[in-house]
Amino acid sequence: MALNHDPEGPRVEGDQLSSWETGGREPRRAVVSVLCVYYSATPRALGLSGEPPSVRPTEEALLPVPAVASPSSLADRVDAARRSTNSALAAGTVAGGQIDLLDERLLLLRRQYLYTPPEGMLTQLLEELDDVEALVRERQTTSVHVRLTEMTALLATLIADSLMKLGDLRRSGVWYETARFAAEESGNLDLRARVRAQAAMLPYYYGPLDTAITLAREARLLTRGRPTATAAFATMAEARALAQIGDSGQAELRLREAATIYERLATGADDDAFAFPRRRYLLYLSGTYTALGRSSAAMKTQSEAIALYPVTTGIDPALLRLETAICLARDRSGTEACQLAAAVFLQVPEEHRTPIISARARGVIESLPGPNGRTRAAMELRELLASPGGPK
Image (cartoon, rainbow, N blue to C red; front, side, top):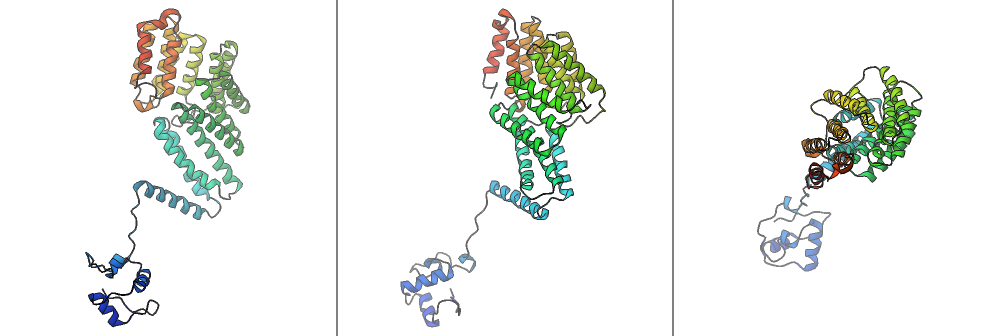
């Protein structure tokens, strides 16, 4: 090894270097320490340890070896770099084109939400929310801030709904609160109503029903009688919850109001989680009829609704068929009801077989009158729901 002379480095005479390198003399310990600091190397790497190096070091060997990033940390760095670049390009305010791109991505997620299992969907929603949050923290114009808070409200609503499907009720509830807060911040009246109507689903399925009625009613009043999809949705949500507590008079009134609103709506998109296509209208109508004990009308509605769903979809068709089973149970066809509920439960793909499906299947057993709850079919359904392949 040739230790080069350097006016900025340690002063070492040429004959000293030659002697050290050939092993004729050993340098003093203090000199070795200085050389190690200067060359950022160990005594062994410099050949000054008294031991022959196993491989003659090169200049490259004296350089630190960079650590190899793990795939996960690398992905995190890639994402962080992209967000940092976007923020730098925004320079304190987001360009209209960047907001439009975010809108396009959010619309794609709203479409995917209709058929993607909730656990996988949750990951995508949280990633998208990270991007929106990063921009919200920057100084924005008023119009841009409004659009970002609207996006936040929509994403938080879908996150809350995913958590509800997964049975994480506490987190679902607080995420619905976040969604309502963001909607209020946006000042968008229709969005404020929509988030409330969506939030009513959590207490509708898991209680208390009074809260579901209150949220749906608030949503309906916020629409101020305008013929919008949100108005129809909120009114149907209120009717369904009223029917569940046995208030048939008010439930029927809301059904008539919703029908009037729906008839005035223009045909809209049916591939958006925030749309209210006819199949969703019929889903709520089915729930109302089922709760009111109008089994014949309910089963007819269920058949019509199921026929409107695409092949690739979420859990709505399963919920409709479980309502058919509830109708059968109340009409004293207990064995048929339990067998249908078991078949529906097993036919739902495992990634979609979340606690909300289990809860509705248990509702079939709870609807069985008198001794029907102790029949063999009912016991088999209970065992299925309690099995490892049942609720998670």
